[in-house]
Image 1 (cartoon, rainbow, N blue to C red):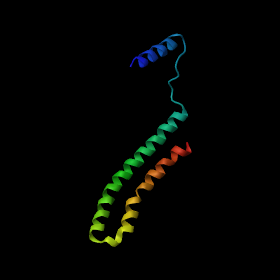
Image 2: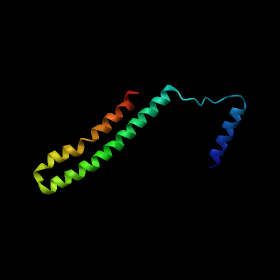
Image 3: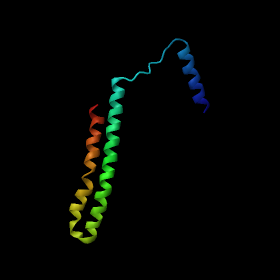
Image 4: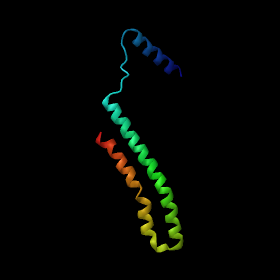
Length: 92
């Protein structure tokens, strides 16, 4: 806790000495923010979709065990949304 107080005091002294801090967002910061929002919304969408699909897949497997492959594919399909949502993280 003391280190935070000291660091804040040093930053305040630097700003008071005439070194104005640049608090404006840069293009890189906006790009990182957009990539984070894309990943977060993709993960929320995949989780929402996987909830319904997972329960349907479990019901299908309870009735017929031979449909395990189809249930696995249906359950893994929403994860492609998260993979596509991660692409801006690697591109930017």
